[in-house]
Image 1: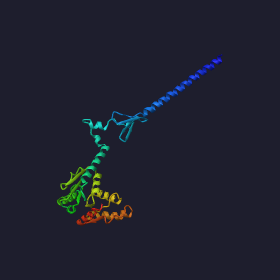
Image 2: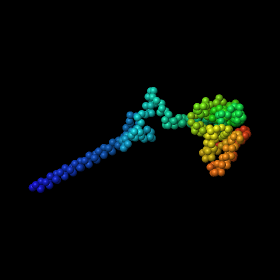
Image 3: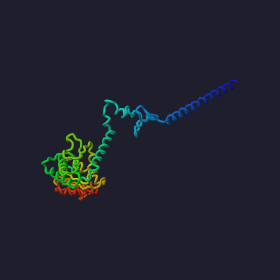
Length: 299
């Protein structure tokens, strides 16, 4: 009898253990179903007014447009709050996303101002050229000759060669355009500009030069002038823009550079041949104008 009783006790204990195991599995299954159901429920909006969905291993998920942030990357503030808060700091205006909007606005302003200018020739050169310099007088003459053909003159809007070209164009009754740049040592556009735009970003300004110029005359200048020249030559050589005539005025100043390009640089296969019909070095201001304007109507 004792043996039979022991077997019954073990059987009862086994049955109870089985029930507990089945109950635990059922509870776990229900918990997993509830978690899945919770994860599949429509996401809510957080206190920032931004879309937020179920938890991930890194914490809550926060959406700001196409940007996803989780855990400690979720911001404690928001742009709407910063914008509307009275007396709050404006440092957020200088963050990269807002800088992009400022860049975009410069492109819009530039395209809008220059859209109906018509054919144009850009004249580059140093801001340091004095009014008594022969280069200043030549730039003024070239600006005048270009404008007399009904072609707009575009410069960087500053003093020196830029002022001279704008002066010649304005006195000829033509379109005298200055694309200025905000610099600590230069004060806006010169007084001979009748259509001017001031840019904050160099690359936006250079885009306007390239987009609206059908020819370019480059007078002696420094790093800024060299930057504009090589940017243009690079775009032409790589077929990023339509080929336009480029004239270097003042042989004594430029010939050494182009001799070096055509020998040392070219001999080492660093560049391909420069088109002699598109790049001219000359001391003749009238020839410079003739070649620079030869691209009108061909772009």
